[in-house]
Length: 524
Image 1 (cartoon, rainbow, N blue to C red):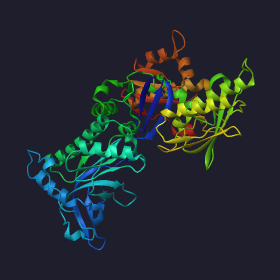
Image 2 (image 1 turned 90 degrees about the vertical axis):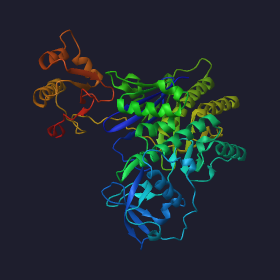
Image 3 (image 1 turned 60 degrees about the horizontal axis):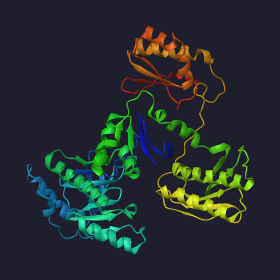
Image 4 (image 1 turned 120 degrees about the horizontal axis):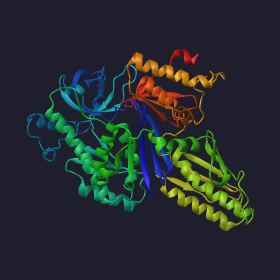
């Protein structure tokens, strides 16, 4: 089985698609504008003490000062305080963290005015983003999260996720981490570390340790305060962190900056796999090139078609998801109705396992398969479903078919449910039902091109249109595109994009940045 990851980066959003044997099995989409400052580590200055609240306000570079309560300083605050002074006392040589001394815990009933004073420098991490008029919420207990482990400098314990139930596995992980963890560090073992080999856990621990070392090095080298010393990973890397698997054969990215971030990340966690990260430079949109756009549009929605005319209807209710399997216009099997039902159901089991991962359908899923009389056929369907679900990262439980022909599945939700609206609002009428004459569409496009070249001064650009429209523009020896190039220059490029509706269009400059050429009058 071949596995590939396709990362589509746009100005406003980023999408990641996971393909197995060219079939789309996981899809994530998130806006790039979302503020993900939680997890960032700063060396900051205390601006104001509030004895009545037993808290302080700290300057981390935001418009409003951040809030730091005495109890959020963390039990190891004194150890951090001493180590920071040691680090900043010598700007040339870094004081080794392994030699740092652990001081007694901060008393829980202490007061902020006896611990901090205005002007003090503190190492803090953001735990809550700024909301409305309030600044960020901070903690003095620094942690660095990976896929399998969480590293906590100055911690002294190794904790294992309570979701790992096996006593033998918990003991194995604890003993293993104790043998490889750096001095003066605590570690939390996450649920996904269950069953992982020492090499994988050791590799991630080294990555997390390096993040801590890099943060401290930045504290030592810089004098500006406040100063960001560790930034939580970018959106692409954050999405990839949960998805990444060493079995991947290719990771394609269509943006140079994100390509470098992903390559650096893969080089850290799996150096032998760094060569699988590739920069996509083709003119066709990356999702169109790898047939992702078409699969997204055909895989989401209420009705999902699969092989030989059969289809499933997926309904989402408040309490559960309900799936109905239908044979549709499928031709009858030569071996009779029973064989026909079995083949339809086995195909539905293959597609349903993909749909559960793709949509991240969590909770209770009830599937109404086509009735089968033979017990061995029902058992075969149950085994097929169990086998298909082995690739699912989410915890799940599958029950055999009931006497009513229903299969019940419970599945943990890994991330917020993915809901893609595959219906398209008409871009020219915005749902009113009245549009301008389609034959005048290319005249309107030429007017936009004229304005772009002669008034705005952009000579090289890419016009993305629906594939049918692109075919019309490129038709003939002296095509419409060729006439535009002769009139406005060879910088005019036409790209067929499957994500666009019939009379929809988008302009992009030479650096693939979106150019908004829509006029207000179009929407009236």
